[in-house]
Amino acid sequence: MQVTAIIAAGGRGERLGGPSLKQLLPIAGRAMLDRSVSAFLTHPAVAEVIVALPQSLIDDPPAYLRQHGDPGKALRLVAGGARRQDSVANAFRAAARESEVVVVHDAARPFVTADLIARTIAAAAESGAAVAALPARDTVKHAELMVRHAQHERTRERAWFVTETLPRDTIFLAQTPQAFRRDVLAAAFEFARRTNTEGTDEAALAEAAGHSVRLVTGDGSNIKVTTPEDLAIAEAMASARSAEVSRSTDSDAGEARAVRRAEGPARTGRAGTGYDLHRLTAGRPLVVGGVAIPSDRGAVGHSDADVACHAITDAILGAAGLGDIGRHFPDSDPRWKGASSLDLLERVAAMVRESGYEVGNVDVTIVLEAPRIRDHVGAMREAIARAIGVDAARVSVKGKTNEGLDAVGRGEAIAAHAVALIRSRR
Image (cartoon, rainbow, N blue to C red; front, top):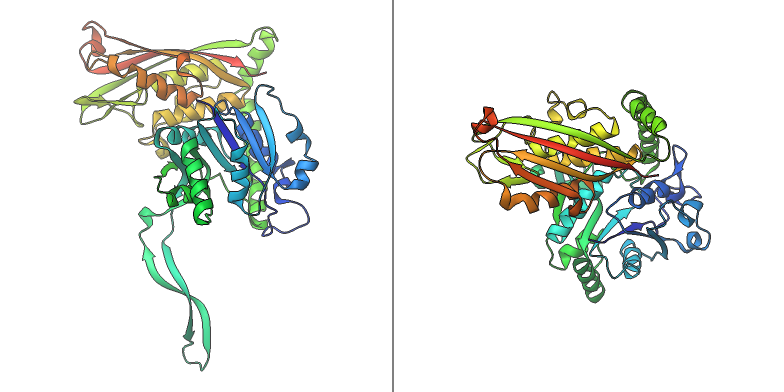
């Protein structure tokens, strides 16, 4: 599946103020635009990146838009339009005809993660359109601007008054990335042109054109820099991340660096192994390799207890010298209660990319007496491949039984063994 990424950077950022274009402002010494573009240029699922810019930047682009480290990945610049949707439409017209999915991101969201990009693309490929969004945490009020008599005064005041309190559990705050199958985004832009519809984002245009838009759980750190206060927050976040990465590098990745030095430039591949086992009990869903398998019993665990994903996660972490799954996602942390193991696997794949490696291939053997997994292997390979950012051909899934021996053989547990190969990105 070929994916085109569009970075919307055609505006001037009037609300932020100042003489410079907002997207060029530095955050911890690195331009906001550079951070956003780099997130997609380095993502393994993205084949090309198109940046919509003011004409002044096209005439004299910064260095990071003139050259980048991956010669196999296209980077193109197009002129933005009067509105955001015009800028994105211009970029869409420049997208490769072979692209099946188009993902759109605001340059003003410089902290987008590889995990969120991958999940949004996968959801769009499956459902047609997807938008990252966070559930509202505060009570939401609908209001109207009204003129009322002030109490105890012979004056009239113009102010906002509440007309309705909206149910918070159905309100979501949209972010980017937003991703679309090519035909869906084309239909959205054609509908907007024909009806003169204006949308605040591409998802709104897709909705107006009659397409369903799927929500993908967003990221609280994926903030949009709009005001001077936002810029100060972004600066603090970037500084904190730099300090955290430095500490993490010293504690978690020191061994990995030492091994890379010992290997030398000629040895670029590393292997790791993983193993996981969970008890089976009635009343729990059975999730294996990211796929729900019909069964009267499921695995017991803090997350969704997916032994295949857990074994692969440990194999990848082991290959990179980054510890194990319990170190990064402990069962004492309520954040991972009921978590999707595919999501944890995506996070680990992103960590490995940040450490200078990428996943080459994985091989997992699932040991389970019943039910048989034969009919689900294809779906497992696809789900795992999406999570780690590789083609499904690089994922092997095998099923075995334990011939009636031990707890697995008696049907009391499920186990998985995995091997992962990672390779240097340099």
